[in-house]
Image (tube, one colour):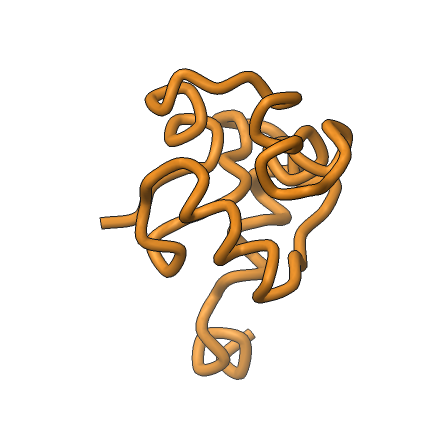
Length: 88
């Protein structure tokens, strides 16, 4: 099962700043990951985040758009399978 970064961070009892300090990044990087403004973190960052919040890095998901938002619709379109893109 996938785990959202924000939920994992909160479950670990960390603020964005505390998590950023643990992985050697700025708080703005954590904020941008949680809001979808940074969508392609490096493997090094993903592994560091997973370790810092106590979650298997491969289970982390970064951005959960709000229901009914334009961002959610774009996010869903971006993650459709290649096969479904060919049908449209």
